[in-house]
Image 1 (cartoon, rainbow, N blue to C red):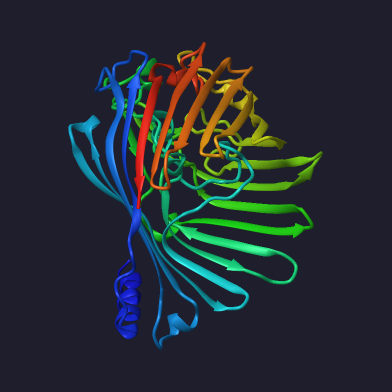
Image 2 (image 1 turned 90 degrees about the horizontal axis):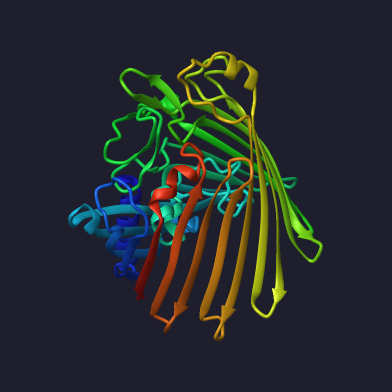
Length: 419
């Protein structure tokens, strides 16, 4: 970060330029609970004021970085969180330097948002960190993706394009009982403030850096891609010490591919991923998550008159399931071998596209659970925007993905002023 700050200072000093203009927004968010749980607040799980500032600066002057079309990018959020009694915080979401040393190479270093893959709210080969607490309480979709401290290198040879990323481990932000309740195996059911777990992150050292590779090629209106990831599961899916209630993030290799392009008058996609559990390759250790296979397929179509629909199907298969079951204890919870998940998105625009009405629905026939996300947004003026919606997870069993979240239902409103 100090290196990037130094480049900004040198460029501005040499060019005699003013500090880059700041843009952003101020926002008030509120989410009222419509179900009971045992978290810190009874009436709401979202009440905060947010100020986001962002700026971009093209390095100027007579120096190497100016010659290589270097750009500095900054985005940061100041928040006052009334859920935690007015706690103030600052999150540096982006602070990076982009440069082009050669015609065939782009570099981007620093804090940045990383994403790839073909899914809509579903991720197969995107192993970059997510914030699922923001997702379930009603923050803007922007906050589903967490920033990473990373170096991204993009190569452009003649046959395929290549992205290669080296990053520091950053876990997913998940429910921990203070703001959102969840299924806690140590408590034997859905837990809130009574949850008592220790999540052990891998220490920051060179051997724990993560690597992600994507090669992709466009052919007409179609794109094909291949992926490789070597790092850690972003969720604490495995047990380090049951007696001490310690969970950890196991080492993981992921190999995948995807295809996306024009299909039957719309856009179709299919994506595969093989998750290799490096610490339990044969699935015989009951304390470590097994390897997985995932396949995602989707289709979206513009039906005209500002109406869009999208459908997805995700299949997950736990590998070496026989070894997993054979090594379980009689007191262990048993998870299913396979999972089917369907999603549907409908979006309709009104009033010269200033009003957007959408419905996103997750439904798993195998887990017998789901999650409904209706939303309405209204661009009142160029500066003012209001959004309303709800988060309505449900499920028959407490230990399924959405069933464990069923006590976190809320309705939310956001008001934003952009400048």
